[in-house]
Length: 271
Length: 254
Image (cartoon, rainbow over all chains, first blue to last red):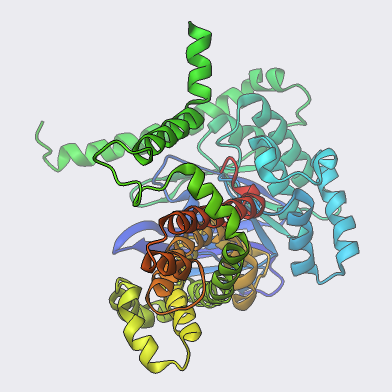
């Protein structure tokens, strides 16, 4: 491996569970600063791929590298936001974030608290520092989780359907927030992998979309995007180029599904 | 009418208590088939409660002197071993055969052996209470620690919480809801074993008070002893619930 390489790289990556292949033959390179959305239907191994990149799961085949080094265990360099709210419920927002800072940056309590306050105000939670997760709405909890994920000084942010459980309004405002935080940071670009099954969300956020097909999960499309800044959401979605991109992804999906059906028919499935 | 029913429902608990008191009064006031001797009147019981107040307080103190150290020792040992065994598979596998066998043994069958082995009655009763409280506390703690949601473990791993720190910073706190159900069951069992031990061999405590007056057929004092035991247990349980609510405030809406 080239030591200067930054970002993720996977070669012939595979993962099986109980002898059943979940992911197979994944070859992938994600450069530093890219915002990649990982699309796929349920069962396509999106979450498994994210867990492999995070180091929470170990591959059963192939290799996976972060900045040229093999990924062996979870690290604060690659922090994760999950769909189910994962702030520790017995700690306040401020305590949750400052605990993460204290553990990862090895700084003193007061300074950690100060930094935590900064990160929480970055996600618009400066008014709720001393609230416990049960006192917060789902959207606020996810903001807190994002603040915590960023606060550890991560170079990569891995998000597993983070807004899947939110209502549309909260969802839209959190999408804009994550864009601002990840793509807006020019001085220190954060490599982002965002798992979703919502095509519109993916097109809105990503600088590149990777589509996974299922059984077993493998890459069926890899689409670079280069859209202008998003000022007005509704207008932006009416853009012809955007519409076309959405359509082409839908087609890739359908082709995968049709192919699978074809296999079934050829296999002599009796109806 | 509807308002009347609403009030009736609100005060039904107190009304039912008064109803039971009425029945007791009726029985103790001597229909021919009853025995005033065995069923002392509420007034006689109230007198006994008042006249024996010092002895009752002393008995409660003596009982607590056995209960509290034994129960806290069981809590500390049970929670510590439970957290480790719920978090570390090989410890759990090592302890499972023993706990599967020993936990269901009713603790009162240890009493004769405890009296034979330990030098004093005090030590035997505290030992029996310890055993009674230990198993539910240990088993519930271990089950709680083993079922900590994956998401907390993953977060702990990402922010770099090590294996040892995980035990007390995450496992212990995340298991508190199950720890408290274990503590509650253990508390109930330790009351039972406390009074059983005192009825048998002790010469102090609430169980001894009841047994002593039963031996002398002083039923007003005996019933007073039972009522007083109820009051003491109720007070401790209320205190327990209060602490539990304070500690588990964060489980709301989870």
